[in-house]
Image (cartoon, rainbow, N blue to C red):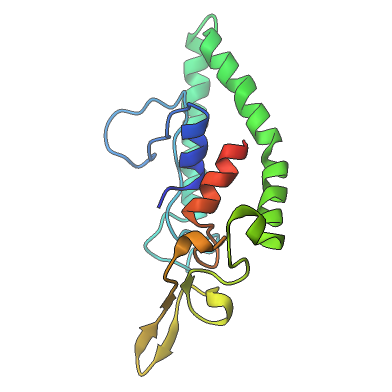
Length: 170
């Protein structure tokens, strides 16, 4: 599934940020990705993910690295400063993107969706729980037949179609 940030990068002609934990040499001037699928704020929630505390530590390391590198540069490149002005514009548009998501939930058929409240995949009410119901020791999840009809893929993520629409707006 294509993420919102990957779609945003594609439509903005920006590079897709490589994972910070990817082995090898890193070029942080265009960005890096600290995310971990299923990560949460609480350390004990998903034990095999890169927790928020560690992601923040990685971010601080990159910030220090970039500060050290900036002292060695005498004049910023034009492309770097224009990418900084562009990122500020994108960040400024995030509020309107959030409103756009709310509009898709409130008026799904206007955007080609049939289901705004229930998620395509999960368990419980509206398939909004990602950990499933346990029946006789077995996890039970429900999966919709057509994810393109849904705004939400699971309890916390929009579908690829919704991601694409929102990224195109920015």
